[in-house]
Image (cartoon, rainbow, N blue to C red):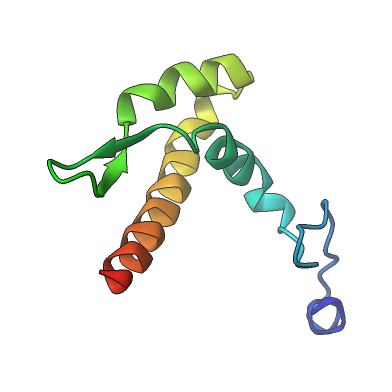
Length: 93
């Protein structure tokens, strides 16, 4: 992966994940927020995941010290991650 990135003039930085994959620096804050919000899920009537509790996002970002100017982009990233989780959960039935 690093060689492919270098071919485009990109340098991969950031901590390694457990599976050895790296997170792009531009995505690191979103991943940190995602991890912090990982227990903040709403459940549907039968106990299935319904989505993130959006009411927890603003206090979380404030406590993390995230600049308000970054919130909109970060929220977009959180919604993408949320959609992927819900898609995977839906596949499992």
